[in-house]
Structure formats: C-alpha cells, structure tokens
Length: 472
Image (cartoon, rainbow, N blue to C red; front, side, top):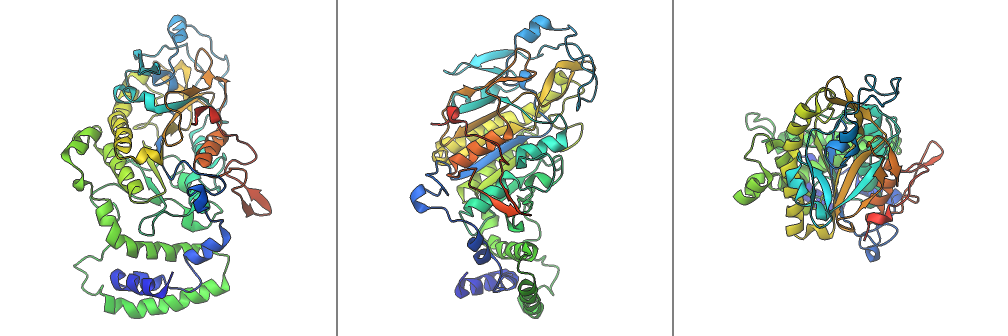
C-alpha cells in the first residue's frame, strides 16, 4: 500500500489506518505467497472463470430431501412398513421406525418438470433456473463433522473453509469490504460455532468476517460520542507506540499471520468507515424490493434482510458470502427429529420467499452473468420415522442446487434410491461440489495447494471431480 493511501486511512480512521502502516504487514506479504489471478482468464487462477463471486445459502441441521426436492412416491406405497435396519446405525439418534411418506404434496414445475414439495411454493416458480445435485452424500450422520465436511472437505476442525480457500486463491475484488462475509441466523451460530468459516492453517486474514444483520451490523465502527477522550489527537501517541511494537513483533515473528490479520482488520475497519454504512443500509432499497424479499413479514424478515445484504455485498465487490438458516441445536433449524409436519414448514417458510426473490433480483440486475448462487445443507433425513413423525439424520443422500453463471439451468445430476435413503447414481461428495465451484471460479482444485506440516493440502483433499453435467 502506497504512502499517500496510508495517510488517507490515518486521516479518516482516527488512528485505525495509522495502526495499519506497519511496514512488514498487510497485503504485500500475502501477495508474495499467493498466485495471482490471470487477467486473461477473466479473473481465474488457472483457466478462464465464469464466476466472479459466490452466495452460499446453508440450511443448518439437515434439510429433508424427500420432503423438499426429492419426490419419492414409493414412500407412499410402503408407508407404515418396518423395512429399515434392525439395529440403530451409527450416527442415528434412535432406532429406525417405519417407512414414512412425505406429509406434503409434490407437483411438477417449470419446463424442466422438477418435482417440488408444497413447503417451497416460491422456489418452485424458479426451478428452471437451477441445476440440482440429487445424490449428494456425507461420510457422517453427525452434525458437527458433517458441517465441517461440507465447508472444509474434512470431518475434523482445523482445516480452511471453502470461503477461506477462495479468498486465498483469488484475493479480494475491492479494498473497502471483506473478501469473505458470513451472515449467521439471528438466533445464533451454526454447529461448530465459527469453525465452518475458519481459515484453518491458511493466513488468518482469509477467515470469514461474521456480520450480524441488525440495526448495527458492524458494531463499534465509530467511537461513541459520549466518550469525548476518544479523539484522533488522544489516540495518536498510543498508535505510534503500537506501530513500533507491531513492527518489532513482525520482524521477530515473520511466519505468524495473526498480527498481520489483526492489522489488516484494523486497516479494513478504517476503509469500512466510508463503505460499510452505505453497503449495509437496506433502507436504500425500494419498497418493491423489500416486499419481494419479505422484510415486512415477521416469518421471513431475518433471512430476507440477510439475502438483501448478500446481494448488496456481492454487488459492491465482496467475493464470497454465506447466509445461514438456523442455529445449532435441536430446535429452530432444519434438524426435524420431533415432527416433520410441524417443524419443517416454519423453517421452510422463513427462507422460501427470500431465496426466490434473491435469485430473481440477481438475474434482473445482470449479476447472474458472473455470480453463483448455491443452496445446500450438511446431510439429509431418513425415510424412516423417528418417534411419531420426525426423521433422523442421514448422510446417505441429500440435495444441493446451484444457479447463475456457468450453470446449465433446469438440469439435474445423480439420483437416490426409491426411498431417498442412499445415493444410487452419480453420488456426489463435498469434494466434487467444491471442485465444481472452484472450477467455475477459474481454479483447478488439484492445483490450489498450501504446504502445511510437510503436506500439500487441498480443499478437496485427494479426491474430487468437476460435475460437468450441470455446467454450460
């Protein structure tokens, strides 16, 4: 960063920019160890990119495929029969009950004839824009490891999330907003708390920036007026001292990325004093936009607001945004053990209208030309009843859809068995999903590596293939 720009940050940041001027820190150090996207590849790292930015919608808890997008008429014929495993499979929370049909009506929609449950009437209207992975599978039936797997490609903590890998591989699109933003459910963080957005062993600057979408999405961006002592003049001496300490620390610990990330965060905070108030101000949206997303409805308001924020962020240069539905725990999310008829409709209704509105909004603004929209979850549910009319965890099969740049709209890949219990054709793991997303961003998943403890690590580990069947 050049000196005039650092001085500019000092002037606007009340010392925040001044803190960031340590000579051995920030972007310059990162750029030396990360390959640069090739302009000839339209921003891609290894080949021409079709996608510039990504919005991922993550349904916490395990959305039931046979009650949403994976129509299984065989469940109606076998309803009530005890055909499941005699002993409780690993990861199940209870023994398998009888086969249970979906309590919701399914209909075919669009020119593609996609079957969609009645719990998603709004998404049903835009299915022709989506491509479905109908046979996703996980290696676990447990929420924590499955959530790690879908985000980092590993069952254990400590590995970088997909957003972190994308930040590391491609860098930012703007200096004024975070590269990787996480918008959690207002009710709380997902399973593993902040683990699913971790930078793992990558430099800490690549971790997700968690922003709560309320009246003050970025708290403490400006000093409170009641603290008269918090002036630029009062801060300058302290920041001068901190700058010296930081420089000394960086010199003595050149491989420790934590201080670098901290200073980068202060540097970003100074820039965000100008950019964030406008970016997060959803009141600038038209009344028609708010109505389309559903911010005027208490059921959809939270997810709708975060979907609008996601669109505003990618529109202004944020590279990767995650929008989470549901917190960790047994209630208020997609973990419908107790009752599918009673628990699934409320959580589905909270996201359905906002998701359809987001898709239409991205398309109408021309953002579909270089933006990828993803809907997914960590695993599915069993075709067997749990208790009365709930469903247990099932890593055997679940559904993901993608829409936007580079996606062949209206198609599907893979198929689960007649019960929706196991992936039968075209089984797709997180490795294949991640490889496909990276491919669209112009990244060869086998070549995006980071040396850690003597091992060349990848988001896709030693697995993965690009699912070309859903790509244009």
